[in-house]
Length: 295
Image (cartoon, helix red, strand yellow):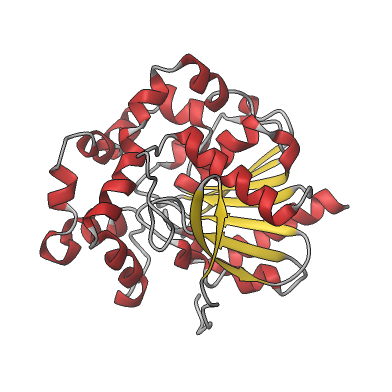
């Protein structure tokens, strides 16, 4: 499902008090692609040209803390800080225009929160591989609690810092790639940017800080009010039936959490890493959703 595609040069900008690195391709209405964990903006290298080629300006930033974007000088990797990053990027690139955003994994989390903070800044959103945040945090299945064991492990000081890089990232490859996307035939070329990022202890600590900020969300009524609110931006949700990180049962029964229009699609042959596993499907499903807004 992949093909040889040249990666565009990395550019930089300042937004929300940080320097962000990003890929850019095409001209037209703004589309932002947000990666997740353990990942980088390279995840979208085969999605970007498919969207850009039909008349969109596509931006794929590296999230705060992920090289070569800056580390947070104040150590703030809370969901609110991440959402404010996205809103600042929309402000920078959109110049008053509403954005279309595709978020995968943590990108989905960030997009949901930002869309609830400022729904006026979004035209339409596509959420990949993560359900509504209220569903995920407050109503997980028993099977999902077992799948989410890594989140609990990441709370332990230094456990993940030692475990993830050892033996050439063997734990990460087995538990976060093979188990999450069991039919994806990933290569060292896919893993190389991820390994390079997490080989820097500061970058690994930053990525883990996203997870370590979750308890703060769950005890903060104001943050919960935003995270668990109904999403009013028109939403299309995509997930894989073989996803070993978040099971298919977690994507059912969410309609009441979306007040601006909602569709969910399950790909029987895909796991967690949809941008890599089937970039053509992700691009087409996103474009179909965007076109519906322009009709």
